[in-house]
Image 1 (cartoon, rainbow, N blue to C red):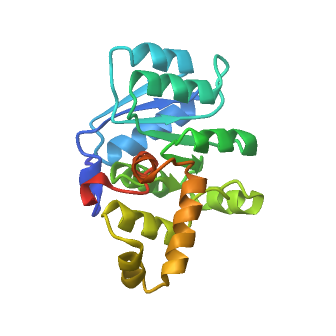
Image 2 (tube, rainbow, N blue to C red; image 1 turned 120 degrees about the horizontal axis):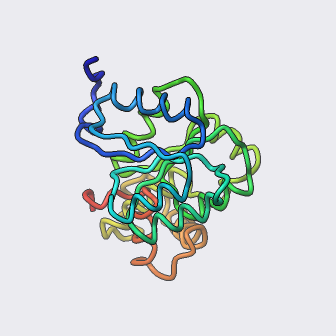
Length: 220
């Protein structure tokens, strides 16, 4: 079967992905979806420890993992992956809706969270966004998160706009003119950003913004 093509299909070409899940049907389904969209290699793992053993020798372009394994907890798995590969891209794909756990994962700066379903478009959209340096949260996850205030410490779109302008070295006055808002509003957004990202200074803020996908370093 020929790979499916779309406007962003090039983002998946030649990529090597790891998929970790304890369910065979999920692993087989993910492998089928990914290869149809042009992914070069898909390695499948049924446990967290199995994945960690493999990445001692192998680095992947993206890690797609569930949040429930018998042999280890997901926060520990995320930490262990990042200890081996600090800039690892990680997408959580799950059917479990565990709010406290999701907060931990967001604090660990996972690159995306989606709820498992039969819609392959959501999976591919998540991967494409992550490869473009963005975070991705499925619509269902966002709805649940907003209702539970899970993402209350996440920057708003306007705050992200201000942060991106700051990364370009613009002053508050210049940002205000660019975004058609007052300088006082810019200062309020700046204050909120330092609180939400727990940043010590502008340099620290930019570094954290890049690591969380709010800023594309190629656009600075």
